[in-house]
Image (cartoon, rainbow, N blue to C red; front, side, top):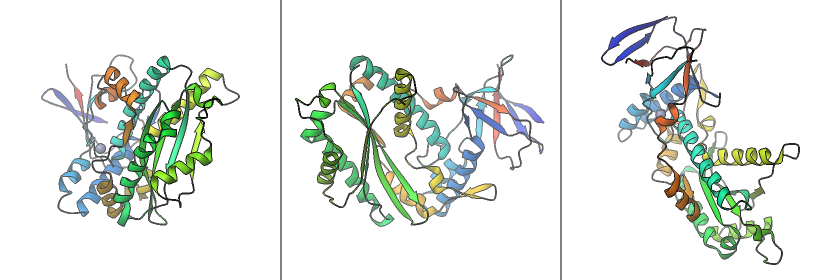
Amino acid sequence: MILIETSGRFERKTMTENNQPLHHITPSGKHRNWRKHRLQSIALGAAYKRLGVGFQKKSERVFNCTRRIDFAKPEEGQLGQTVINRYGCKDRLCPGCQSTRSRKNFMELMGLYQHYKNSYPADRAAMLTLTMPNVSIATMKEDISALLTGFRKLTRRKPFEQAVRAWFRALEVSYNQETGLYHPHIHALLLFPPHYFDKQHNFYLNHQQWLKLWQQVMRRPDIKHLDIRMLKAHPLSNPEQGKELAMGKAIAEIAKYATKPADIFIPNGGGYTVDEQVIFALAYTLKHRRLIAFSKVFREFRRELTPSTKESEIDELDVYVWLEQPDVQTVDYFLHEFCT
Ligand SMILES: [Zn+2]
């Protein structure tokens, strides 16, 4: 049962004890686990609160993330209701807001790549993953700086400049609960002009040469791993569709979270907990960091192209559906329906 009370321009829908859970469905038909995101933001808010002074505002913002969602009036025959505003906290570590941001990034990067492909149809793409040995909290801020500086240096090296026409990159930090160590790394999409593969020019770099370059710019001969792979269509798929699919997967990798919620949020009796020291480490080290960066070609395309895709514009394409089964969780959110 849903009670509806009218308040100002909105009808407030509050839930009774037999409340129904919300399901959040994106235009591509994917279910976003809204309830899980909400529970994780409660855990994150609690962690910020435990961190004390200096984190109180963050804590409040995150606690209230998506507590209120404004819906448009349901249309005849429409499945669910579209969102007007979801009041996200926009915190970098909030899984719900990260998920929204990663969809926004994905749409933007796909748009940029399509534009690139029209300008340079013969170029080929590769995914480069740059890593460094795992790090501890104590040095992580400097280590991340070193990683990003290393990448900047790499892009200025002659062999890189000769080989790569354009790139974009993302920073990701994963966390290992067992060892307590962090693993900062970079995913980059590289675009090679056809002459990169032409033997005459000698621009081609094999895996060993890529690794060597990376070791040099990082000044770390102890780096043993680097992954570079051309994006290829699955041999059984239609070549064009397969290429698009491979590209979509690679771009999703770059567009996704800076941290994986699964690494840091521990399920706990229907809800989640998160270690405040881990949150402190990630919040402190990712502060003011640019998580995604673009090479010059993409920066120019971006200026020409990207309409400011606001988060709400993406959410507007979503629908929320009330499910039949009752929700076992205590309800702590308010949903508002816009009245015309
Ligand atoms: Zn949020």
